[in-house]
Amino acid sequence: MSLAPSLGRAVVRSLLFVPGHQGARFDKACQSGADAIVLDLEDAVPPDRKEEARVQVAQWLAGREEGDGAGPLVALRINGVGTPWHAADLALCGHQGVDALMLPKAEDAAVLRTIAASLPAVALLPLVETARGIDRLDEIAAAPGVQRLVFGTIDFQAELDIEGDGPELLYFRSRIVLASRLAGLQPPVDGVSTAIDDPARIEADALQARRFGFGGKLCIHPKQVAVVNQGFLPTSSQIDWARRVIDADAASGGAPVTVDGKMVDRPVVLKAQALLRAADR
Image (cartoon, rainbow, N blue to C red; front, side, top):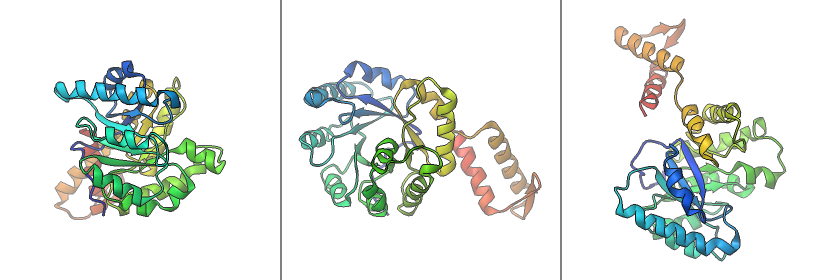
């Protein structure tokens, strides 16, 4: 089982990307309602602005330290191993204001072990977005410091020439969920929805991720955050069902009982308890 640093909060549902070279957006992102913001030093930043992005992120983190530290969790998506920016990005992750590090194209558990050794207080979020990453899921999930796996669906689709984000990726999503459970990690984070002004589509994507066993989702725009957050909360009908299950179980003293014509046993009670805990977030 992975010995990951704890972020000290409930499992986050929404993780909002913010381009690292657009510092004016950092505070706005913190006000979006996202459970975590991901300051992106990788794909969102042109090569000629990488250093500028690090400077802006460092300045913002320093100012955040002077405040009360309230607000969403802060993760940095750094540039990958083998790029000319990786070492400097990694050094920035040692900043006190960084809660987590998101490593793109995560494929090698040895790399994660090295990072964990140098940054023992920072939770690692490997971004699995290649065929090799999927093939090595168990090793990646078991690496020290890893708290959650993240599925980079768009890059993954591109590499494997997969068209579609629904049943086409079911097998791979299920593998990520299974590897997370076996390693004792928090439920994984699903990839982004490319829709921005289509709440129905975003909601459908979030509900799909939740049905598959994911616990959160990446966001690329503040408009997506509220819909994603709601998508990972139990519905009113689920909460009502859970309460009736708990009440029926208590009334029976733990003996077998039925609710809505279906038997209630220990696993059903545990499911009801989990739903009510999620509703209290």
